[in-house]
Length: 274
Image (cartoon, rainbow, N blue to C red):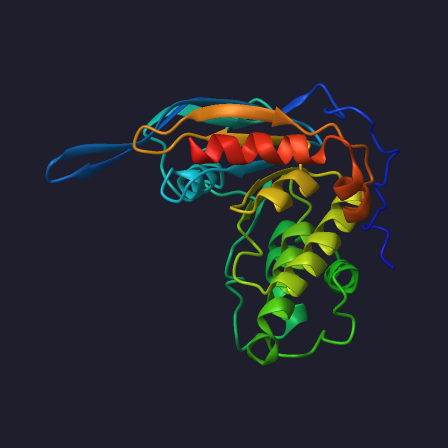
């Protein structure tokens, strides 16, 4: 295995924040779309700081601007007001410091699983040797359980396997921030659970700051250090933030049996119902 790949596993943290360093800062964020009837304000006065190595889930009703916010963080959607910074540097567009896992994997269907992952790896590590870049791509495909599918075309993979490639592709570029836009929303419950476990297993080792949108309350609790709840739009903003004080690494069984699990769940459901 190439020396460019390192095991970044660290001692599991018992608190909410594994680091005091702010990785991602959303400052007075605003998004406006012009319409024939006037400006439509999707987001307004949205403020959020996410710390290094923190996993944050975002939950809220459909249409409240969650995906809009994530696309702005990714640099794919221009900011109407305020600013977004990664480690204090304002973002001005897409960049390799932010990896994105979409709801649909968005793979090149004529390319193999390996070639799809290499697209990003080749861009981010241009000075690595070809063997090193291949090793990186293969390493993360193995991590998501696709060691036997390196040379299978994306079009020949199931939806769940395609999303595994998407996860491998995002981690392989070694981003500072991982952005996930309902990555398991189109999958059946069994596949969804399997990929949640794969995601958190890799994340436990990589400890990349992660921001994930979900409509699933249980998924939000299982994965997160904090759950951010957004108000309904227009002019959506952060309505509440819930700290999830479960130790890491965590298992689904341990979460479900924890004394605070149903308290957390009720808090989220009560917010969404009011």
